[in-house]
Structures are given as C-alpha cells and as structure tokens.
Figure 1 (cartoon, rainbow, N blue to C red):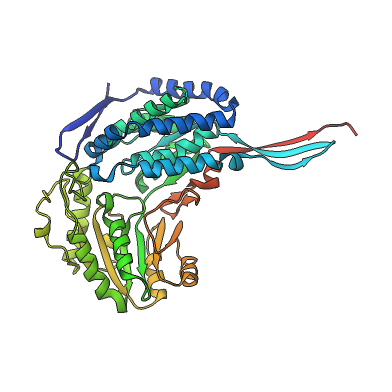
Figure 2: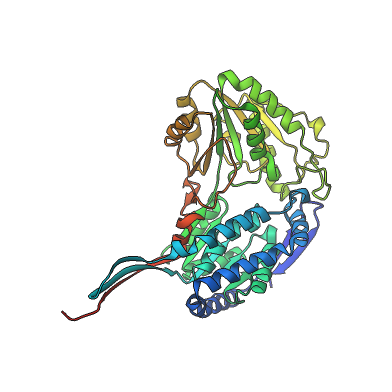
Length: 461
C-alpha cells in the first residue's frame, strides 16, 4: 500500500507517515458520507450549529499540541500561537449569520399559493486543503458546509497530514457524526478518479494554478461544482499622502509573515516617487529586525519554509532578478541561519521591473520587490500587469481616491491601509488565474447549497 511521508522543514526528518486509501476504500468513505447526509440535514439548524461550535471549541482545547505540530509540519514559529484567532472568528461569524443566510425567500404565502425558494444542501462536499494555513483554509468551507447540512470529506495536503486528523477528532468530540466529517489520505491518482466519477457535489480546492487546472481536467464532464483559490501576486500601492510608518509595518509583515507563505501575502510594492526612498529605508530596517531560526525558539520571528523545494523557487527567482540588474538590500550577514535549504533569509529587491519572474510569478516566500511610480495610472497599470487577482492594498488618507483606484484594479478584494486579512463578513474571492467562486460571508453559504423552488397551489380554483 502506498504511503505519504511528511518531511519536517525543521530538521529534515520524516515527522509523520500515513497510508493512502485505495480507490475502493475512498469510494466507500464518500458513500458513507452520502448515506449519512440526509439525517444530518434533517436535524435542526441550531443543533448543527451547536455541534460545529462545540467541535471548534474542542480544537481550542488541543491548542498546545496543535501549535507544536504546526511548527514541525510547516515551520511556523510557536510564538505566533497557531491559527486560533482566525478559526474562532470565522466560525463564530458564519454560525451567527447562518439563520439569515439559509432562510428561504418567500415570494407568496397566501390562502391560494405558497411560492418560495429554499437553500438546500448540495450533498457531499469535498475539500482539498493546502498546507500554508491548514486550519483556516479548511475551516472556510468546512464550517458553512456542515452548518448547511452537508457531509464533508477532507483531503489535506501531504505537508499537513496531522491537521485533518485533529479537525476530525475535534469535530467528532463536538458532536458532528463520524460519517458526516471524514478525513481521508489520498494520492493524486485516487483523488482524480473520484473527481472524474462525480463523487462529490461540490469541491473546494486551494493551491497552485497547475493544481487547479488538474482539478478542472479531472472533473470535466462530471458537472461537479468547483471552488478554486489558486495563485496570487498581491500588490501594495503606497501613495504620497500615506502614513509611511504604518504602511511599512503592515506591508512588510504581509510580505514576510509565515516566511511569505500566505495566499494574500504582499509580493510587490509600488511607491509614489516622493516617498520611495523613505519607504525603502524603513522597510529595510523593519526586515533587518526579523530573526530567522528554529520555530521552537521564542525569539524566532521567521521559521523555515515548509519544504526546501519551496525555498529553492524563491532563491532562483531572486538570483535571476539580481543577475538582470535588481539590487538586493538585505545583507546575508544579518541572517547566518540561512542554510541553503528550508531556512531562507528574507530579501528586499529594488531596481526591479516586470520582465523579472520575481515581479510576475508567485514567489510564496520572504522576498518582495519595490518599484517607484509617478502616478496612479502607472501604479494601476502595474498592479493589473499580472495573471493573478486576489487582493490589492492601497495606502492613502483619501478614502474616495482609494475607492476610485480600487474599482480599476483586477482583484478580488481591495484593502485601504491594511493588508493580508480575511474578513469573514466579506466574500473571499479572486479573478483571473487566482480562480473562481468564493468563500465566507453570506455568499459562502451559496457555494455549499443549491436553490430549491416551491410553487404549491393550495386550492383548486
């Protein structure tokens, strides 16, 4: 039987190993979820909400274990405490709005007719979750899917094998039946077979553009609804009237947190000519204050990347840019822990342009290019010069200006004076090669439900 080995970026050892399910066992798991789903959907909405809330609370009780496991699996420093703030915020909000989001639209309820539209669960929801924020990304779809009355089959990334196990353990403790939420370990071949067979009614995938294309190909002809959050190359634009200190603090944190391995991390910054030198100088000072090292060291603010091959992509992009004329501003002497493997020092590049991969392709690591711009039009053109469209971060004291610029940017979310944040009240979505569909907010419930219409004539005449 095939196995998946999780190699820890901390020390290169195999931290966990799990056997993958063969196709017949995978089909059986989906079948159990489908068989159990009707009874789960027949429960009251409040009972489903209560079970999900209790499950997330049980996950909170595992905090110490989960934080340590995250450090071993993806290298995130333990000082940051896991993903509990976002998990609790998103769960709480989606539970709070469930009644309104799932309420029927009543067109007529008279003595003669009942005409209304309900939101019905789609059935079995498949979630293919990524490793970078493994709990948050899984929660985004798991919570509304379960609350809406679906069963869920979760396949987590090979780098975060233990995350699915913890989620299953916690949700079952909270009262979600075992067949309603299942964690499975699958290889790509079995996953693609299930997709091709139409095993799921809805599939949410978060990952690379290449992965998204593979999902679409595998599901072609099955009529399976897909939600895809793929790549990103999110820009920041700092205008002349921006609070530079605040902009540097937020944008550099957005570029470097989690070693730059954030879906909506800042990967390129455009700065008004008049403030460019000031911004760059303060950004360099900010990044030089980071400490690269073991995620178990309380002083560490930058752990290893999740795998050495991810670090190699960033090193390659950076080296190519420097060879083409980019100037690196961070001295390697500040980061002697960079070992040429998973431990990667942060970098700021200037003298960059859009002929360089580092300014066009997703880096997903602790490197950011900063360019000088002369006008809003130039900044908008450069921000749109990307195959991706997830978020854009605008820095100005003028909200009307930010709104006007934001409407011209090809992106899913526009931020003013903040970055790298998912507001559960606002739909999380993207455009272009970033994907399609949306999660969170009222619209997040629409992804995991379908409309069911009623036109009931109560009398003959």
